[in-house]
Length: 542
Image (cartoon, rainbow, N blue to C red; front, side):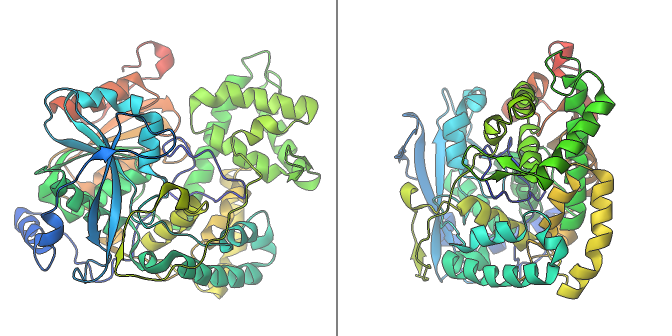
């Protein structure tokens, strides 16, 4: 699912941030149909035709270097083709990290935390304790996908802020032609600063990289745990390599079919529901800054957004803090129910003292992106040093991967003609988040058309059974996407219904955590349609 980019960069917790995704420029990639015959053909094709040298490599692990890296975290890399249609051409290195199994290892489980655009290595270094139980049977491995982090990171240079400013507020609505022209120019800047990886970024190529990783890790099948956008990546892998799917879990299931405009509507609707759930909780507390009536609290939030948009207050950094800045901060806080008490206090600070610091803590401000020189292509791109990863890599990669996955490219005339209708739909589903989410439909203008592989071919899979986790109160990936994706993938998909709040279930629900670990470690798959109850009911099981 696609996120609206922030002019103030958000807290970078992938499954707990505003992450959301789509996939790649799959030029010439043949569809992977279901069935053992097709699977065998795909395996033969992908290990031959000049690719054997990539499949024959093994990972060499060393201690991770860099700030705040745990001593027991090991790092390595695999080399992959820049362009899979030309495997004898340029290459790039994909950065890996792992925690070793504590006992006998049955192989590896590969993690993707979502995004797209977030560094898997940084996420595992910061939040690895959530996955330590899996080391009872596996090496727990993650990676920086191509174009991200240390793996040939993309950048838009000074154009990143231009893109954010062009789509911030109502500019895209009042002057769409001007905004589209600026976005087209910015797309050219992104190509200049990103270098040769940009045309080969996205989910289809990332899935092919994962199969090289699987083989380099010594695994016959891929065991995988993907969150949010990572569920899309897992589904594409399963379609591309159906006979190589091991135990696969998709948590916070992304859509495979909806265009960006519909994804934005789903996001606005989900965030509105999450806000209303938060306010229902808030008004039960005497400290709630909106009083004790939920309907009145909703009206107060809408009035506060409108007031700040017309008359911003100074932020902690001296910049104007607008209603849309407030909406963005609230949206970040709603990704985890654990943040609700902090959000309540931050809103009270704003209402009582005009103090924006609490809200800005959810989307830290005042950053500017340093400019680096444009990248020129070379035949082999090694890992990028941590200090050389561009500051704008997260938003640049998010845009690049989302747009590479999206085949729709409406013309300027089509965009302009549809904006009024779209605006009415967005504001109808969410009076608070509708305006904020609308401008995301402009993000891919000026970029090459993306792949149609995901919409057309990721369906009717003949794989080992996989577990799909959907959370009822998820503000980013609505529960219906879980059931729709399960129906699309076919009988191999088993749904676990998490009746809780927040984005994804593994970190927030003990029940989900236990069922996922039981499947990955022991192959114990819950019945299709079984559920986990809200954590407030006791042990979280249902």
